[in-house]
Image (cartoon, rainbow, N blue to C red; front, side, top):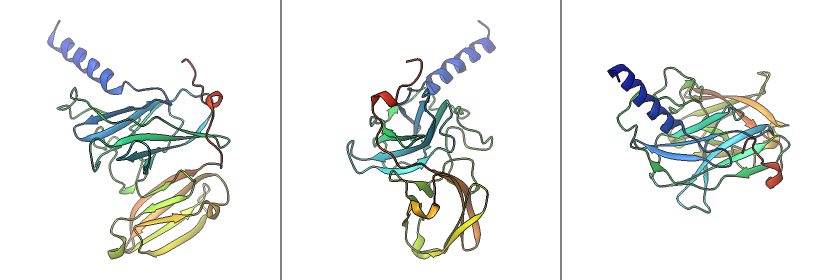
Length: 242
């Protein structure tokens, strides 16, 4: 076996190991050099409208939504928790379907992946930004191709604003509908966590926001508000080819 062939074989094996993903409602949770990678494959026939990633120190309660995916229908998908407060936290995924039903995946703790500890060029299938740090969904800055960590939809379909150090900064947020019509603006925000009730957005669907700090654009992104529903039963969560 030539050297080039050997290198290709090793990289192929590495990529296969890294990208191996559980099929929803199963998830893969890996510790890759201190960054927690939550990933999955979507083989549901029923359209998926929202996927939120949640974490907790406890396997049963006190979960916090840390982000969501912009394209929940993607066959291969995932999320990178770049700065976890503890590398053995529990992770789960909230999945909402068209029509309002939803489910929660079984909580899982990260498994350390040493196969790629020294590989700096690993890129995951769901990453689309060619300038992003491989394997990491970077914190939101300006125009963002990744799920927002600052504005996202909670489990109750209300919208959460997370504004770090809000007491000492001047945050403004502007919200638009999917046709880019301005809905409303929130100014001089001083609370670190704010909840915007879903009734302010009139109906389910995609919405866009722009977040400013002292007049400077911090992030431009979007989020999805699903229809109200209930936890899906076993007959509603049948993935194909299982």
